[in-house]
Image (cartoon, rainbow, N blue to C red; front, side, top):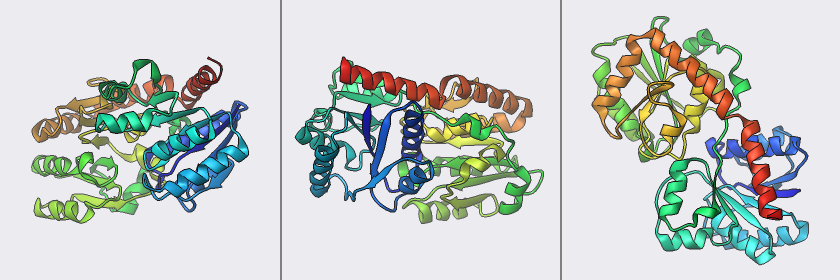
Length: 361
């Protein structure tokens, strides 16, 4: 089976990393997979490092019609059995268009739970035989946009659980960020954009520091709210509590160094960062938004509270700060769940079955 995968995201965020996981696992199963992506992107280097065959094609976004034309030519010259589009930044709309022109069967993955106009959804998904939703929450959004249920397949994202088997170097992490030995560390990771909800997290931490003088918050990620969030932290008197660490491609190495992982997203397809935290044995606190209830089992692997409720978020964090045994119990439960339900092998096997169903009915 010859599959061409298309991912046009610039940075190696959760979605593109999932593509690397998937394509590597598919190749191990004997599928002939090639990744097509823009040059000099995060997934470009990551895929090459993983031994994945890569072809580069520049994409300017959803209006980049030259991308559709060149992708059509590439499909016609290489004749894959199937095209799998993974990104909304041009890959889905233009990828579907190219697949139609080249007469190649296509499927698309959807990783976000935001809404759009029904007419746009109809245009976006018309060329695809199947739409792969990474959570039931996203599947519900698709059905609400009049996508036929039989065209939707739920295949959850995965996490490389083996990567978190070795204990994290907490001493090195604390030394790098100047964190005292007795401090309790809250971690957060995600783009610094409105829907990730960092402003609510800062408000919650401001309320907590009066009772817990030894807490520290490390926020990983980049985005256009960087300066605004830094200013908010200073205005709340959190200059000695919060650190903005930027984007790090080795964050997985440090995930197990957090005592609590906080994910206050207002909308979320599934929340890959929360899956990684759980795999590292770290309990998760967050808003009950989108697919987060599928990534985190409330009361078992973490605590979920109502969206935008700062007081409830603050209280949930405090509950775990007060109880080391609860943190350990939830962390162990999360690790076990990731190993059993969110493995890369499971995700890859479900994709193979989907491909075969699309091609052979």
